[in-house]
Image 1 (cartoon, helix red, strand yellow):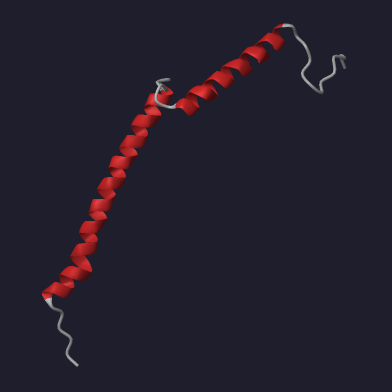
Image 2 (cartoon, rainbow, N blue to C red; image 1 turned 135 degrees about the vertical axis):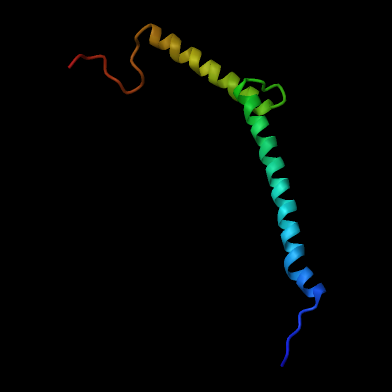
Length: 85
């Protein structure tokens, strides 16, 4: 049995998936660029467009104020003894 591959079959098997992979890779690269820009904004503390991050930052600031206030009086934290060993 002699098998002959038609040009259309070769095109369908090789070229179409190859070009689709290139297209998907370009989309992936653009998505990585967008994610990188978002991370850069967050690092620079430009979080106006991210309400969840604004809330987390407020909570962290309050926690830091409480911890700093407590440490300024040298009070023991929960479970710590004040005895010198």
